[in-house]
Length: 408
Image (cartoon, rainbow, N blue to C red; front, side, top):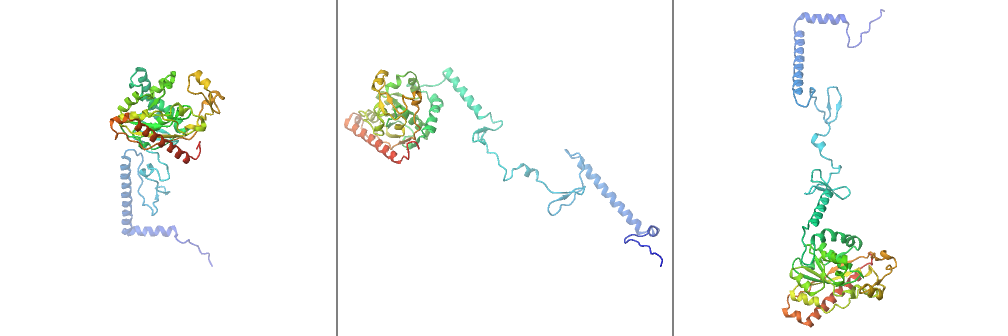
């Protein structure tokens, strides 16, 4: 049996293919027309591709011809001209917006300053400089006014600008961070008009008056200033005299108190004086005698309310164990304190103990309902003096019961 030639499926001999194609060409009919229509379709497709290339090259910012569009797949993928499958990326608007997991920078305030990562303020670029630059500029402006004398001082020597920007800034760390003063009843101080604040006095050194002054200024909604009446000794010391005048203190006399009340100021007085300031540690929080009631007479003359004030925490800053009367007479002081640290540790003994303070302003006692001649009635003055003293003493006991510890 002769060997049969195996022809693969789908192939045919060249001779038979050529004969078939020749016969088809000889027919001169439908095959030539089909080839012509196929060629015309290819030419039309090439022409459309050239036109799209020209339109893409004419667009600004593009230097390459656009490829023919390929239909998107159901999952959003696209097949490019090279046959590679590309996944859709985020649009330009979506890429510019931070996602929900990305932290957004905090918004800046009206002054162009926004809080930084560490809690401090930092300025936005182009917002007129950083916060420290503005503070430095304010400091230079303050110094320029100091040098040129372009600042105001009242008839008592009170310098409001110096007190607010310098003196209060020096006392405030001691007030807020060291003694951690807690203020209660600040709403009992009137928002306008005069008033007389009467407080207990203690602590060996008069730091309680300074803390009360900061408490009124920093906590009152109207930002009022407390004008303290100080003893004569304060204005006899060289440096303390000038600082006390600049801070708004004045002599503890009826004339100065009446002039301040007439101007609608808040006046602070501590009727115990040196008897309360220099009392021994064993008599702490026991009020001494309130004098002859001169502060009540002043309040009655001007019809201003009396606001009792109780201070807890000042008694323990310098526990006074003794009093050297000999040294007190030599130095001209009302007393010379001996504490567990002073004078044994020298200057270090003058550092106060970090006690926890509470300052409470009680309900005001009105005086505007009395007739003008009531200021000359001694019985009325004594009764009102005892009423103020008893209210302060009762509040002291109440605060001591509520206090957890001397230092906390």
